Image (tube, rainbow, N blue to C red; front, side, top):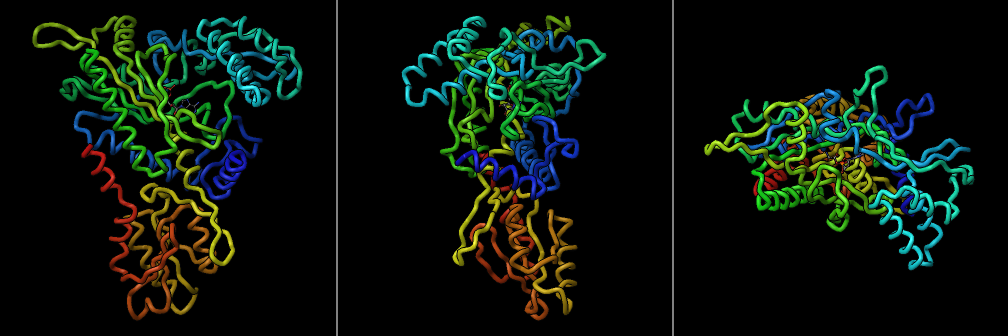
Length: 479
Ligand code: GAP
């Protein structure tokens, strides 16, 4: 059922200008996608929502945009060069690469459905081997279970080994595409602090591309090789009590941000990590109920002083902060990291509905949070004659300076409404013969399809009321 939903979502996204497979005319490229004309608008609106709620309304947070390529020593210092690894196994016949832990998990999910005791035994053995980094032990499970390649059904596996997930630039030794934006914030932490005369606590926010050579990149926008992150590094006094306080603060702040999207609170779950990334002391995921089950949407971690200390060590520059008592401290860092493509997928998936209408017909409608809709309103002439299109075009020309709008006269009114439903336009204004004498139009609401007559002068106010971001920012800032 959920698989079907995902297929429906992928085809709807493609057929309506949201997401296209990258380089499709050449057959596409695995786990890379392009955002189409409506996709880019939706993505920009999500970015704007994040940026305004993290940077604009917080006086002690500023943004920056650091480069994707950084000095090779950055990745040695951050330990991404040595520790940012995944497990890998090759099949010699198919020449395909797999993550052995996922091969095992998928196998037990499929073949041990009716035997939960045995399934749990295998999973806990796997977790034990993963924790101990016992690669031979993991391979033994694959052999014992007779797991074969999903493509060729052969069992000629190589040994399991580690594989670094950073993309190295050819011909430039040790130059990598960054796997997170965070290191740019750490390397500039003193520049930002000094030029802004900041005292801790303060934060640096970034939105930018990251790249990871994912072995099993699939599930549409969920696991990509090129993706965008929206990350905050928040620098605090290095004490455990402060760490606890700010960790809780940012967890609640980020949850509030998500809940304002109205996707349904039951679709979120918190998952506390036992095994943490190499830089973290505490961490949790905000998980979301994706078409393929609950999976990580956003990560919240305390990175303590790991990164700044490492950069001090490798750069030999002083990265501490002097206090009035002459002591120097290295701040702790609380990080929030949200994948832009993942939240895009979560929003799209939760908004796409197929509804049966009273007349028995179905309509496909994208009930996006209205403040994120790519197009805020459409102006539609009811007929293409008697000066009606001119009036409609005039309204459109006046409004398009203020909001992303569409003027559409190519079809019957029913067709025009369906087209706007499919891309999530919250309001449609129809111009008809009555408009000529009364200066009124019919407004039709996307979600309940109710209609109402309003004066042309009220259009702007209504769009603002229905699609503005101000009320939401107000609620978030009064946290
Ligand atoms: N700076 C910390 C960091 O990068 P992470 O948990 O590896 O932590 C943070 O990644 C977020 O980035 C994830 O919660 C997810 O939303 C997103 N993300 C990570 N890898 C991704 C991928 N291959 N494709 C899409 N989004 C990804």
